[in-house]
Length: 236
Image (cartoon, rainbow, N blue to C red):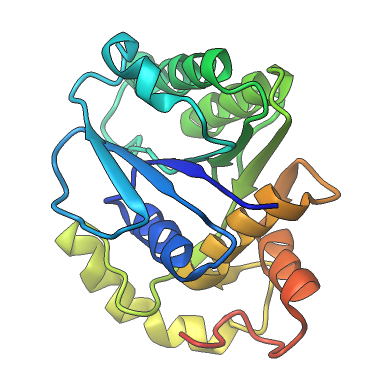
């Protein structure tokens, strides 16, 4: 199946990785990126919409039709945030965008970036995990053609991908040796290349689970692209 994805959060580390993968994937015909600020990214496959208020998509709703996949990489750290604030920027924003997309694209597949430790019960003690769990549950209950929740653990940047947060780039440089020690462990580590491929492969071919833990993220790449390497770090 040819993919025509919309990417929300294309300027973040994971969004950059997915966009890069889209450009090299011949099965991706066109990409729409929606950003709050102009990215200055240019490629013949890519069209960008700059829209500062993602809680009000009415002005751009007509431009969101004709796509079959949403790659949702928007996200903020819960550090220093109240549950009310985090709920608004995570659950409320995600659901608003999802509902708008469903109105304009009946055959839409949703791929949502969550995280390992997400609490599907919505009752645990960890605030971010409860909110992410609530968001996942709401997306899975919506009438998307398919919906996949991705729960990565540690993600090592690969192929020049960098975080927009300088401190994170320092931390990734420090922890890189740990990645190479643990990269045989599908349970704990992956890299941005594998993560991006996994999202596109799930959208194109489907997967046996709606919630993909770190192990599944690495597995689906090998499943559909052949076991060229037994390491998530191949090509890093």
